[in-house]
Length: 60
Ligand SMILES: [Zn+2]
Image (tube, rainbow, N blue to C red; front, side, top):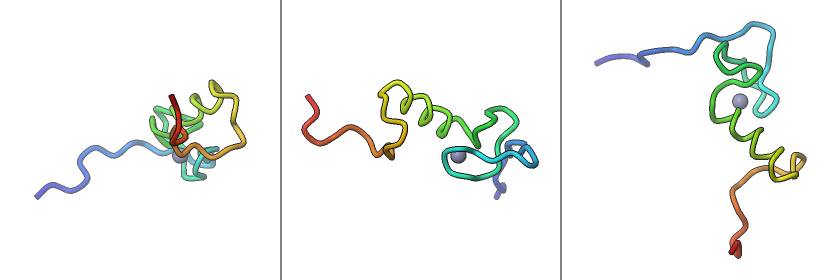
């Protein structure tokens, strides 16, 4: 029974701009790769202000 295994180091005083959690040293200013990619995709799609819930239903 192992616990969480590896834990990502957190950066004190820095918050992830996506979810507001503590930033990870490896991915700062984001908390992790997931938020890092979320931020990137928002910039790429030009919809930074819109929550990223995946592509629209009728996307072709
Ligand atoms: Zn985050």
